[in-house]
Length: 81
Image (cartoon, rainbow, N blue to C red; front, side):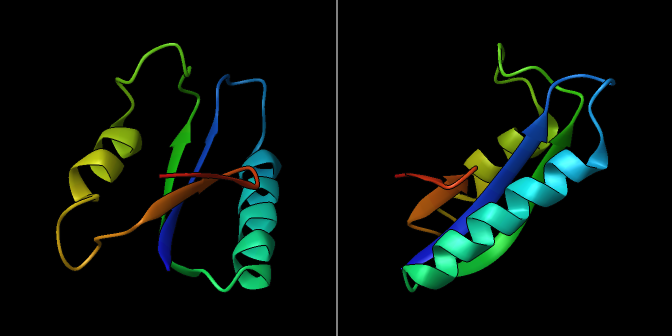
C-alpha cells in the first residue's frame, strides 16, 4: 500500500514543530501498518476552511498520476482513501 502524508497548520501562531509532530505520527502509523510513504505535502498557515491550499491542490492533482500515484493519504495518524 502506498500513501502520502499531508501536514498543515492553520495560523502564523503555530510553529514548525506542529508539522514535525504530524509527520512523526503519520510515519509511525505507516511503519506499523506496512504503508510506504511516497511524499510529504505541507501547507503552512493555511486554514482548512477552504481547499485553496497550494500543497493540498498539488496532492489532489498528483493522486492519480505516476510517479506519485498513491492509494491513501495520512493526516495526523488518520488514513483517508
